[in-house]
Image (cartoon, rainbow, N blue to C red):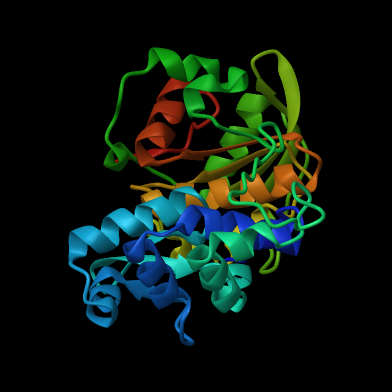
Amino acid sequence: MPTSVSDVRSNANDQIAYAAQVIGRSEARRQVFAAVCSGKKRIKTVGEISKSTRLDRKQVLNAAKHLVDHQLLFGQTRKDGDTAYEKDSFYSKNKARILSFARDPRKLARLPTKTNPRGQAVTSVKITLPTRHFDVRHVTIDEIASLSRVRSVKRRPASSVKMPEATFKRGFQKVIGETGRFKDWGGEKNDLWTTRLKLKSTRVRAAIAFKGPGQRGRLTPARLGKNGDQIQRLFTSDADLFIVQYWDQVDQSVYEQMKAFALARSINNGGERVSYGVIDGADSARLIAAYPDAFPGEKKT
């Protein structure tokens, strides 16, 4: 189960004030926020939200996108074949206060925050978030200097190669010059932790999760780990770069969850740079083609 990252955002009153300002006087945003954050369900579909609010799908999608973009909802995913949204635990617990402040700007202006410490009654309040409180970057395989030969390999179908996870990991280690031994076990944070990987000309600490070809189909967060918590465990590694490798298509929700944990880590560590990326099936095939000597045991299909 993914963990909310709202607890790393400034202090409680600032978070509540920020949420109230984002929701504002938009009735659709208020209703969608209330619907997602109500009840015991962690994730609710557009259909469920539309039914409970009587808003049409377009209204729900537009309002929810605004809330996700401003991190009031944990993220967008899929459930029962429909677009769905996951509530943020902090904002869910403070739903009533947030909606109350959103409805009453004068009441919001009296809420003590870092930007309004006295909570003075004014006709308007402007909440400004720091512009450099985090440094998060998404990287692709083509941007990793240690894997530079991949850039000369054109796109290849994911089905063009197949090999055991352990074989691929050994080949990957050979490419980057990592000679250490890394034994898999059920509760590991990562499958490979290394300082041999380079982004541009700089060596970084990298934590990598490999998903073998035994699992096929689109990869979602729920399929990462027995409890769907592998991304969360990956980001507890002491690293600068976090990578998930898979043999097929990787769902957008994996990228979104990795971004959320990257944001949390960067904010919690004083704005340090945190990079994340995915090596999907097509890029795995390109990697093997670029370094055939490192992967001598691949089986063509």
